[in-house]
Length: 159
Image (cartoon, rainbow, N blue to C red):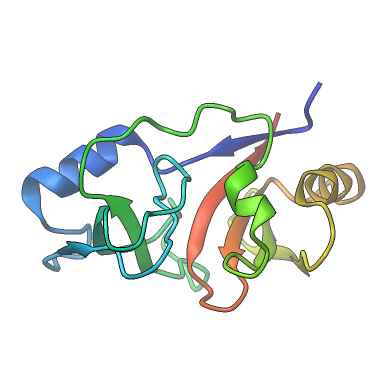
């Protein structure tokens, strides 16, 4: 049994963004052909450069308004895509490409206060997530972020 569950940005949220072309901060979003590999925060699959349309928006993955909200840029697919479904393992295409997707894991407690940080580096991210949840009882959930760009990739909850 897995110790965690991956939570992508929801398909419903992405549909709202596509229909309004505005983010939650009242800013117009932009849609362009992918110049980078992404990934899409709904499907958690890399974009095909020069092929896929992607929408750039400002997003905060938090519910509580405080200093850790960290709003920042994310990409979603310009077309409707299915949410990442293999939720009991980290997305394999992101995990396999450590050069394009260097990862950091940031843990938050129940009050949404930062409680843990770790660069993944050459570690197996699935194993590291399990170890964090085993050894840090105060970590309610994690955020996976790109360690270079610092942008949010997905939420990781205890299973």
